[in-house]
Image (cartoon, rainbow, N blue to C red):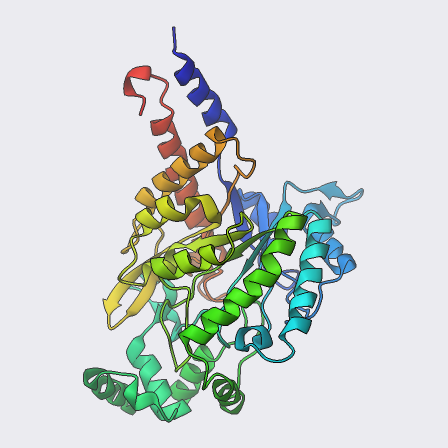
Amino acid sequence: MPSAEFRVRKLEKKMMTFEQTWRWYGPNDPINLSYIEQAGATGIVTALHHIPVGEVWPVDEIEKRKKEIEWNDSTSPEKRRNLKWSVVESVNIHESIKTGASDRDTYIEKYKRTLTNLSQCGIKTVTYNFMPVLDWTRTDLGYELANGAKTLKFDMIALAAFDLYILKRKEAKTAYTYDQLEKAEEFFDHLDKKDQFKLQKTILAGLPGTDDVYSLEKFQEYLDVYKDIDEKKLRKNLAYFLKCIIPHAEKIGVKMAVHPDDPPFSILGLPRIVCKESDITRLLSVMDSPSNGLAFCTGSLGAHPENNLVKMVEQFGYRIHFYHLRSIQKQGDRSFYEVEHLGGDVDLYEIMIAAVKEQIRRKRGGGIDISIPLRSDHGLQMLYDLDKPFYPGYSAIGRLKGLAELKGMETAIRRCLFDNSERNFK
């Protein structure tokens, strides 16, 4: 007769899976909600991109977007979709908060009101980042792989060429090694005017979900604002934000999940402070609260040479509120490009095992946040999507492939951990 422990584990197997989610950019996204349902996701990750950064998200706008997600109004009568708005990515943080400007408390209060309104509408997981000025940064949004698929690439030499010869930042020459300076000069010499503008536009793209691109003049204005803000000051400003926000978030049942910096090191003279294990330890210790958590992005953290991602899941798993799973291939000089989910330098198999074990630990500890949202982050542009106008990294087929691979891997791992036979039970 099966032991009591075996019966418990068999029950756990039935009860637990990750919540499969999909990032959707709203009604203007070329991938509609019906396609996402067909892909097998049940959770939507989105934001109100049309509301300016720093302004309050009104309840009626949140409810409108929620209804768009959860109900299909193309049928009569309307039918409920098998989708829900699971995660906000992101409620972006105003630059005044990041710089510690005199009006930061005004924007923090607005941020609290947005969190309150989201909670009132039943949306309890909120992602954010604390990267100055730029969000995730790449130097090529259509890097072609040997098989013809396209992907995102960050090339340190291309960035240096932009910094030195297009932006012409005064301190740029001291930011790179002699070898990098030589390579950057050679790289720039091979760019025509069209290539230079393309590189500029790629690096200075605004927030995800928008088509905004900073001008060189506007970007330089932001750099001037940050000229006296180093890592220490930025950490201090993040701590101030967390000490204001986290008690409120905990009170209203919202889990805040910080996204790591991408790439995970300072660029263009801007400090970045959520890059590696010690950064996350420091951040989580600012406010010891379940609402002070992490969006664990394997692509962002995987690009930093010091990070052991499996160890980090084991160490910080109790505070991981959201998983972004993707892989990258490092190229030296801190350059990298994104690859298929089960390839490259990120071992998603071992990471998935650690994540599943963390979920089991939560269940056995009586936790209520068991169904952790997970999404196939980014994806190769491939097959019939090659010439379609998707947001970079967010084409349909590449993400569908990644979602299927991750879901299959999760299923296989759970079958191993919850094998029918006590003899093979681990």
